[in-house]
Image (tube, rainbow, N blue to C red; front, side):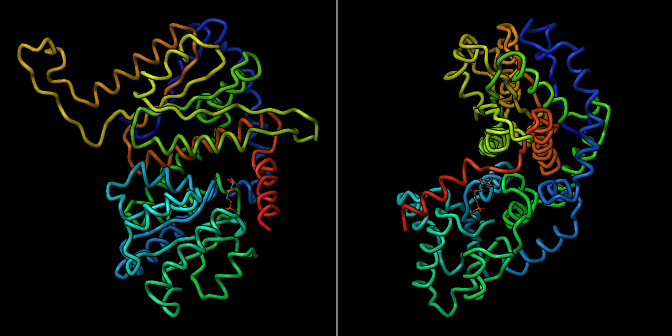
Length: 431
Ligand code: PA5
């Protein structure tokens, strides 16, 4: 089987879901714009916002990260990544999707809930723990509060003189509070990805914790390269991230489908759905278009989890307002699987010999079918396997699709003024 992810969108078509689906002519119409869009993006290729497209090709950078991890690991067993939003969700999605020994990487900083600190405090051995403080601006309240808390704990356990070895700061090297403190205290500094945090997963932000867990980060980048090269295709049929964007654009603009549901049928991808949620929400939720016209656009992303939500959300999905587009993520082959034995005289003989992975895929296919029967548009992303190579493709697929959606909607997908407001207000209130 080919190792490239497949986007199956047959249940998005009007031939399957009637007026809620796209017509081939509409898709082809948008497809005719693709060449122009790709040209525009090419012209902006050196803009830091679009540098996420260069990340998959930086294998030399991955090499440096692997060497750094090799140097640090004899001394430290555990890594605590401290960050929030774009400085947290990508790394978390990546690590939780692939790592089997997750106890070696913890996350802190996406809340200042004291309970979360209490529970992590009980888990870590400070002498063997390294903290990676990640903040592009270096000024984010939650991250800074968390950093101050952990710094104090480390100093209490290893003394002020030794504490600096326990911190690596990933931040914008041009400045910010964190950068200034790192210089003052002598913490190691890694340069934060130059574009927006939500596009940074394949930079040092995600690669460092992934390498810490021994994941093949070069394979991850090579997978992302595949998707990036496909996005250079000007023929829409060969460009899956454009197809995804075009179908969502048509649903949003023409059929009132203002909600995008991502429903992975892989437990390991539950955190991925949260990464996707931020990517879509912060990138597409915009008040003004590129010409400064008030537009107030954006699809509302929902992170759903299969098969759990079949027994919790599906009633609404199938019979509530037809205002959603669904995307499932499945894997053709599971890294592990278990066959069910025969349970004699139980009436459950039909399950004998079926594997749990098989049952999972059948659940997803039945749900996709039932949605289609109710005229609910849905597509399925099939990963050949859940591994570094395929996950790299999946990250790049969604980042590119979001950029294409922004191009079709005529908005800037890289800013987030709506987030900045509350950040400034929090600081004002605290000061
Ligand atoms: O996508 C974004 O830009 C935001 O979610 C930020 O990543 C988040 O607010 C954290 O910011 P910083 O990395 O500056 O601490």
